[in-house]
Length: 410
Image (cartoon, rainbow, N blue to C red; front, side, top):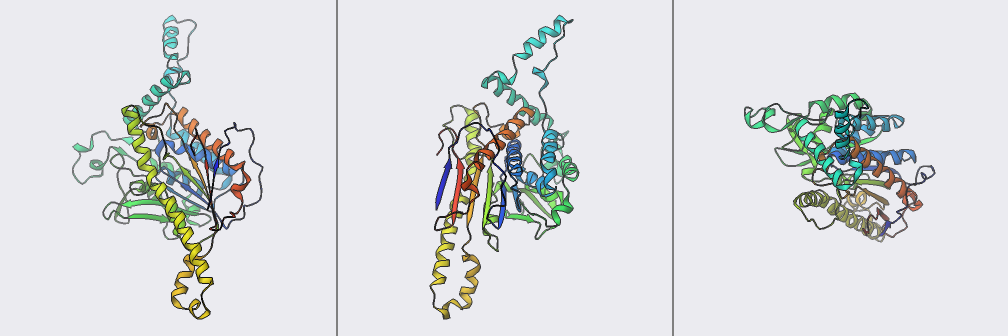
């Protein structure tokens, strides 16, 4: 198997020219969980859409499930606008460095001058303080259209009540999804749609897929119901939590599904497996999250490579069997798993800035949202500049993986 690392660090100057559909039977978009970092995925989708690369299958976990619903639940021409509506709704501007100076009120001038020193554009230290302020505000006030704090701590609610099982109420998210997502469109099957969640009672990982389920807002909410912040979501008598508790990537769901297809897959990760040695507590907690939420992604990627190798070996072995063995019932059962399908796995991942810490997944400022969005958009354009990304792999096992090198990352 070949692996290609993109090292182009030039600034984005132009978008790759639109071409016809790549020579794959399926284009899949795989969206990881990561809270406020999910705006990176919106930027990735914008870059793909401008290149004419519209997915046939969109699958997600947690915030990736919400982004997947915004894609599958809208026509191509409306999706970027719906992303913008959602991410502007749930984020907020910080007014304290935008205090309007007054030419007549000396007091206002003095306050404006003082607050201007906290403009996040004035360096990493000030930006870090600004982000911490925004994260604290989200903890205290929630995010509009997404989650709101309960009036009383869950410890004071009667046992067994929904209010006793979480710190935030997510009913506003249901209203947001109903307004921005056409669930009839999702259930029409125009695009395959899957979101992962965990059954609270059994601990089993479950995928809600529009080929087997009638998708409702609750299925999307269940995929992002991260405890103890958010309550479990009840669906058909069972309760579900965030799929990221078991696996933060939907790669295995796409790889294992039958029938196999030649696939161009864009895997959008929000947590980096590689990072620097932490030197303070906030960095330790941030690094802990990165390792925790990226570990299954790396494990699934390694498993994917092994499966592709075994499928190829099994396919070649079946071709060499005598006719009487090749026609046996046992071989018939093995054939669907041995189809020699090819894969291009394009990995696009967000890499934190120095001023971001363990609060980055619940820091819902407008400035950070725009930064994350632009990072996803730029990374996608840089990736698509390489024509081999959209070409069928030539390696013997039919697999070609791509990544972007950032800050010396190999």
